[in-house]
Amino acid sequence: MSMTQPSETPVPALCAFAYLRFARWSVVPIKTGENRPLIEWQPFQLRHPTEEEVRDWFTRWPEANVGIVTGAVSGLVVLDIDSVEGLRAVAERCGGTLPVTPIVRTPRGWHVYLQHSGERTIPNKIGLLPGVDLRGDGGYVVAPGSVGENGELYRFVVTPLSAAVARQTTGETAFLAPIPQWVLGLSGEGAPKGDLPTSGSVSRQDSIPPLKGPLKGEVWKETNFRPLTAADLLAHESEPIIWVWEPYLPEGGLALLAAFMKVGKSTFVYALAVTVAQGQPF
Image 1: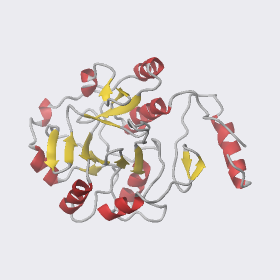
Image 2: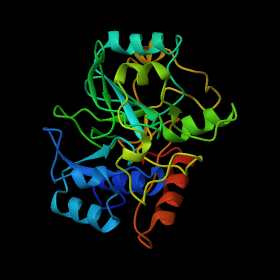
Image 3: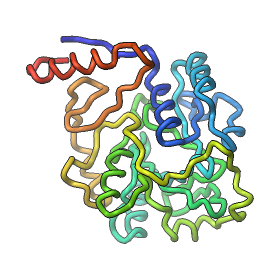
Image 4: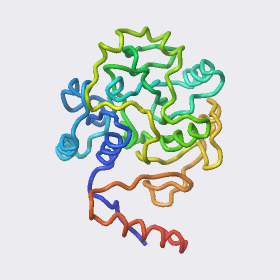
């Protein structure tokens, strides 16, 4: 059975809706190949966009990538790692393993997602460590669902869902790991909480959210949620992704099917299940 993408909505747009609805992250459209916002994005450091705004952006720019605004507005900071040495340095600072938290493989390196402390501003900082930058208040990152300049995908290697499950096994309820004290120390925290850019739409990551995001090519398997080392991520680089349905559904991975109401999601999933159960190509 051969099928096309089940929705005409661009993949980055579907991801933007998922990040906004489920992770409560502020999102913006990003110009593909240039990694800069296509809009005046400063207002979205203070508030989340509406779904109508997101729909309008990706109608105007269907080829746009999706960006996540970091900082207090999203309850998110990101370690932007651009080298193997940087990855190893972060793991060493964290006691030998990486935080149990969502991790993204980017065309140049990795993004490690962490929870904003919510107590003081956390500024952007270039060169937090060699090969490592910090994206905090007033910053943004290009997110999974996006495509790099040379066609490489931004993709989760540790998904938000897997991070939530792994953290729940240790009694944690947030899917983002708290920002380590060494990061706060090197970042030079700024103004107290009262001066943070926030809005009434902001919700802290205080509970395990539903499934979200383009979840494929994971490092973890269902029964293995131990903390990862830098070597784990580097070894994962050589493992090819086996697709059930290329490039949307990986074997052994997780995926989100998102679309508007009454467009055939249930019928599509039924057809997928029957086809895979019969051992037929999809």
